[in-house]
Amino acid sequence: MRASLVQIDVNERESADERRSRIADVVRAQRGVADLVVLPELWTLGGFAYEAWADGAETLEGPTAEAMSAAARDAGVWLHAGSIVERDPEGPLCNTSLLFAPDGELHAWYRKIHRFGFDSGEAALMAAGRELCVVDTPFGRMGLVTCYDLRFPELFRAMLDQGAELFVAPAAWPARRAAHWSLLARARAVEEQALVLACNTAGTHGGVPQAGLSVVVDPWGTVLGEANGGESGSAEEVLTVEFDPAVVERTRAEFPVLRDRQKW
Image (cartoon, rainbow, N blue to C red; front, side):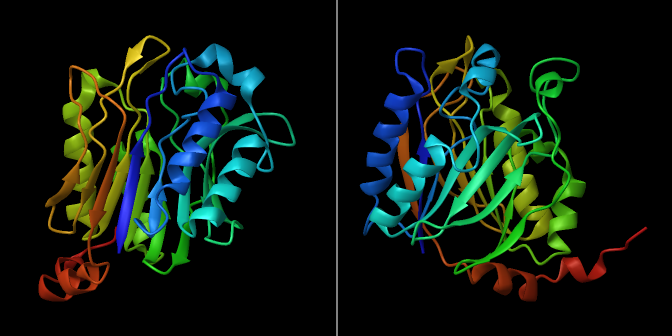
């Protein structure tokens, strides 16, 4: 299979509506190029643009979902549309990821469990998700995680117990912790003997330069492809990587470390 990770430049010069329209065209351009397209976290508003969240929040049937559904259908791809600021019908904001099937149907959504910011930012402004999301796809059982979730291996182990074979992680990870981003993506792949597709934002939003370094990692921790970026910041890029999803089953059979796992 081939996956295209779209490392989107999120900046204040472009409105959310303009960015939605532009990225929909980028997704459509992946027709015949990729089987799966992945977008980053909170790319319409910015992961650190806290002041924009309340006014820009939307529902699961809102403008981003509508635009991405149409783009997935036109491109004939599976589309992990990154995440949106979702306004739950009961009131709180959530950081919610959306996965669309090639017919444009919303196949799954995931509300981010671990919120970044400690006592401020996302941790103060958004409600925490409560449910794991592991779903069947043509590429295997897919576990949905978001950004800060990468720091919590117990979440990945719980999804492993639900049969996860690959993890998709949209993010808005800052440049100043670029080394952590690369390390954690590889660690989660090795620990779970799974594929990890981690798509980060580029540019600067909310005054915070983004690390970029979107990456695809195989179950041995081998980096199959990596976008530009690092501690000095990053630029927009479409990273397309080809790999065999069956590598997960082969790796787990050849090196059956998960059989020796002890549960406490």
